[in-house]
Image (cartoon, rainbow over all chains, first blue to last red; front, top):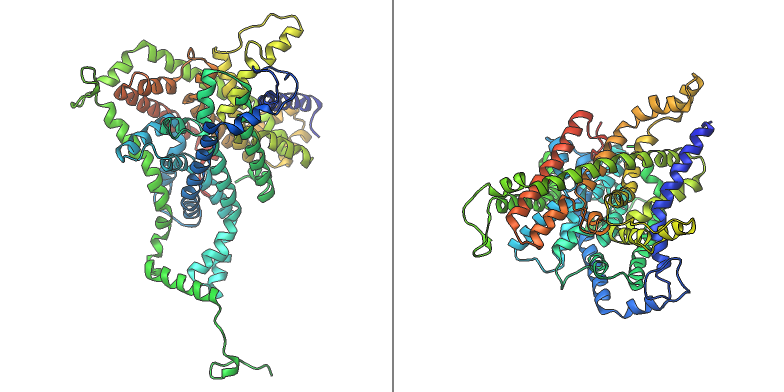
Length: 265
Length: 321
């Protein structure tokens, strides 16, 4: 159906995309197995010693645990808030709905450096800077539109008559919400929650601004180490992120299917 | 005749399940806490937590505005008491910042162009392919880097583009001397395009899905070649996606920090790097805040103008009818 020239041109561009999207990942993972003391590619020999080294490095372990804590805080803060907001935007008629949309898009329209520094000043004023939970809250703020989006698109696909049917069958308002509305938007909640967690795990700039030497998270730690010297153990740490991303993609595909992102609104 | 259980018959007393009790209690609680006559405000109650959470960010903007109005008193190294616009004046008059702003805007423009150029065929093939395995593979290729994060991806590019990196080794095989591929402007733009590609494709794909395959078939059966049908059918109908993608890519790359910092090696600073330096190197908080606010304004103006001209595209939230 499509013309030959179109197919060739498009596939050439697609292959170029695939190349530039995947090669950095492949290189990082490959470099983590090198036996040499400096990054080289193709890797010389095969060894797992760098993984052994990072498994023993206390600072990396602690940074990893901190990243997990931050992502969990982000998840706990954003999922209920984002779910309710997504429902409100798609199931209720709100006055000033346009103004609310613009307001809730602020985390995306305000540059990360701006929101990061702003929140740094606010948390400094509140005297909570230096603990971990504000980082999680800040990451919930900057990625909130993601979960609102995914919940509201799920809610848009949910038939409103189902809720009416439930309540005419005698379900109270809470039962209607718990047994009809919430399961109906669950795919959106799961997608949004997964996005929030993984994006918080790998977020860099706001984490850089809100952490100090005692609360540094793993992406910031990697950045700091790159600035000084590039060694294979860093490639091994980076491979941890590759594994997390693989897990996340697999989970997302199993739970809701990646094709959900291709659906038109 | 079936026996109807009645409450006065002790043999068939009906045990009210625990789950029902809990649900009743919750319903009762909800009725007490949020009576049905409040239902016109239910939407507001649901959205309030989100408004408050984003409120932290708004509060931060006000904090920044406040601190941008104080200059740094270099005698005591603390912000001065008096309110002044001197910081803004300093930014406006500085040729360095002018250069940094121009570089960021130029790079963002280039990034939008190249990213859309690559993302459009990618999204198109991904949406249109009839083989589900191909679609899945393309989706996975897209999502992996999206989740891996910017630092690790920039690190991968550092290894590739370094003097002893893969790219130079490959060039060496065909007899070309190693060239400096890193720490220059094209390297930063390349990094940005690589970073933005998943965002752009994910914004574009829904818009392309919305285009019925039949319209293209109709165009080609009426004699349009693929270029014509792409130009007159696909591009106009994909406009919401192109706008959404362009906006996201443009604002994210305009304000990016990590790519200029890591791939630019300090010589290719963007606005965000200048702001960071003001806060953490020179410790001139007022000047940094003024710069950051100007960046916020610049970004909002660009977003505002584009939305006013073309609508929000696929960026809109909620199911707008």
